[in-house]
Image 1 (cartoon, one colour):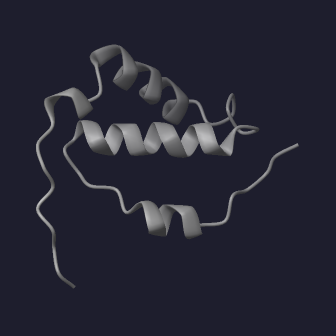
Image 2 (cartoon, helix red, strand yellow):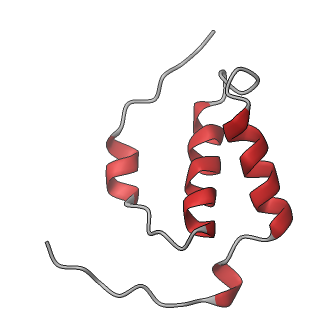
Length: 68
């Protein structure tokens, strides 16, 4: 697999408040069980905050669980 260098865009880094909100969502799955896309966005935000790349194609292919 070929790795592509990701450009460093300072404006693309999540802010402290954005990361704190994402941590709140990830740390309390029972409160956000009915919002699976919000939980995925929070996870992707935390990964971006660590400087990790998220494979959007793989993420989109994963099944979305719906809680009622």
